[in-house]
Length: 404
Image (tube, rainbow, N blue to C red; front, top):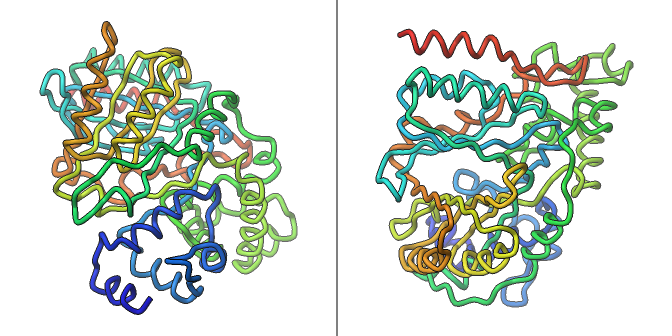
């Protein structure tokens, strides 16, 4: 164990034991604290102490994102992705304040530069969202676009310590039922896009869930971050009259603790899955990641996911909200794994395909940790428990850009 601590301090990002620890985090359907991990995780049959687990998380804090992915549909939001060819003005990306993801890349079929954006859009404004991008194209602010709205997302992870050796991937491990069970469950269930009744009773669930996106924060940190965004408006999220009148940070933190305990206890209702993003895997020189859209239908989906999972360090499938035969996929792999994926794609004759390679350097020009983190404080009305989507305002800003 001492040798492992020493390697951690020297930032040996691909140490086998470190990768085993990260892989362990991906295979538990809840966020665990250091005490829980120390009870469950073993290295070579040896338990690790809680203090060691805390130290690992501290050492990894700038390289590891470990968090629960919300069920956005339970918040009344649809997860919309838009692939854009020829984006002319980056300022239009943040006109609609529901943005949550940004990526620059290259379209494989045409070698054109592409931009992938994701927005969390209130269900009743999906048509307004589509009209916004149609107007942007008509105003020549972009060349073309395609919108994909996901109803669910399932993430798959390899056993990193078995598939990544000294910077070289070895995709030889067997498929695992753990992630396919999650996928089968997602295929069976289709949650309605509407604000959950529990949120109407306790609107504080909204900032608690969204503040934890890409973060593993304690209750005081969640409260502090929400307080900084909302200022005195934070008390509008609290239905408990005594706490509202008291307006004490200590009382607010206690309410966060109770609410956090509640949503964690009912994990599957509020969250899709635990997500782990380990930055060194994405930035390694041998690795690339890509997004794909395929018209393969559900009958071919499981077979393709077996190929994708077996040839990826991690991957994902986005299930469609409306386009029943069209699926979106993500893969983090190397060139050998990518070639095998492309060979499989070649067997799908007469299938519409879209493939976008990520461009790290181009993305870094705009990306910061908070750049595309959805700021609920600008979009949610806790008094009426509804999302505020100002379509006319967004269209006016779009017209101003087009006129410049």
